[in-house]
Image (cartoon, rainbow, N blue to C red):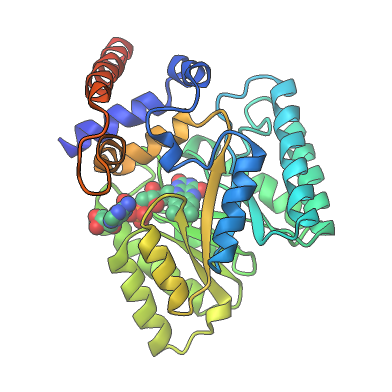
Length: 332
Ligand SMILES: Cc1cc2nc3c(=O)[nH]c(=O)nc-3n(C[C@H](O)[C@H](O)[C@H](O)COP(=O)(O)OP(=O)(O)OC[C@H]3O[C@@H](n4cnc5c(N)ncnc54)[C@H](O)[C@@H]3O)c2cc1C
């Protein structure tokens, strides 16, 4: 059942028709719980609120299905604006980018040039740029672009996905580069990736522990309290400097645990996505953890003291779920 739900939401996240329709419907379906608005002002307001709690941020201007150069240029301009605003307003934040949004599927050289502009401006203001890792089809090209950028800029890094068999080798090759370690969000084949939670968790901890013994900065990105507890234990035991790593979680997830880690004196960074193109990101979060739907439904239907607040929405939600399911079946 869990796998069925996972595949269902993953299929929706890749559906161009629904992604485009969602932009027209507006910002709905409970996405506001996980996406910090559709414009830069809302995103920066959210980051300022996090900063006030002692939390830094990495901001991601969402964008999927980019097919022409003009769209990539607009995405790049938005990211440059974001960098300028972070600098001008002295906000504690870096930037996360996706190379497909910057033209990777159109022309690798064009994408590299876009990234050079972004990394160059960010370097001037001492802002770090993280290149998010997308599905395996884009993996090699992402590493190629990162390595070219590293020849000229030291303010760029990327993500290592623990579900990949090759993760450790790639991590070792990037031993002096700032990296984020994650489990991996895409559906990959058993040719390239571990398929079970046990194997992925085991590799995640192995990678994190190895990195923490090195010198470069590491972001440990997970909502898994068991892994976080084990990392905390390891850090104490090995006397690892807390300035050399941070925990990261996505905006809207486990906010109490986020604050708790800050109170315990750990560096913490929240990943803050925003933009019109929220549908694919939102569906991937539901695929990772279908229980997130419960959080949304509860938030929409009930007041804090558990009173039903919006009955018609039940009908609306059920109708929407049925519609999505039909589209999914049709596309299979
Ligand atoms: C900051 C950040 C950046 C990321 N960047 C990338 C990227 O660039 N590329 C990529 O492929 N993936 C990325 N991911 C996604 C990542 O790969 C995982 O898919 C995602 O984080 C789910 O794995 P998990 O370790 O958080 O927990 P899971 O393995 O999903 O859950 C493990 C356990 O943790 C607990 N748990 C998890 N979530 C919750 C919750 N919301 N409430 C209560 N308990 C919970 C539950 O007990 C659950 O069984 C990123 C994730 C984060 C946090």
